[in-house]
Image (cartoon, rainbow, N blue to C red):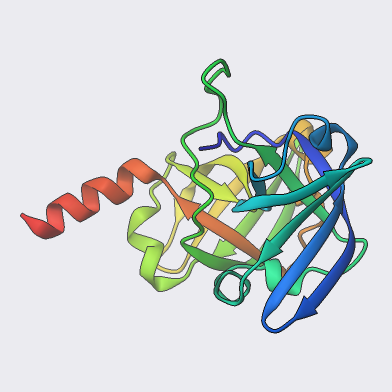
Length: 197
């Protein structure tokens, strides 16, 4: 389990692909000092298992299905990635409940720079649109955010404060950029309950 509060911006050092498997080598000294082999690690919002840790480098493996259902299959060397180690029982619960199970991939369709904030408008996959509500939580590339007031049948907005832009790579998400989306877990539970009643 995660919170969506990014702990470090890592850098993809190398991507090795063979037989449907992608092996990601991530340069992330801070995170490498906190995780061990087989720990869970959120990479751009996707929960992966740590395969090895050595000298500031973390290696994770990404199976074919995860590559197809998230943006991790598009990662290349030198890309910046959001990293968050899994919670311990002693951690504070900031952000919101995030599980690293991506529900769909959205696309940035508009960027607006306003006084003191950057507004991103993101096109939503139809199968998760009903889970996104104004002022509700949403995870975008692993970052815990609040949905803005503007939610349409196909898009929603998020408003990014300067500190979020400094601590994450969301400032670099240009129009056309694809992002991993995880809807609020409580909304998913309620929807599932209502469907089975």
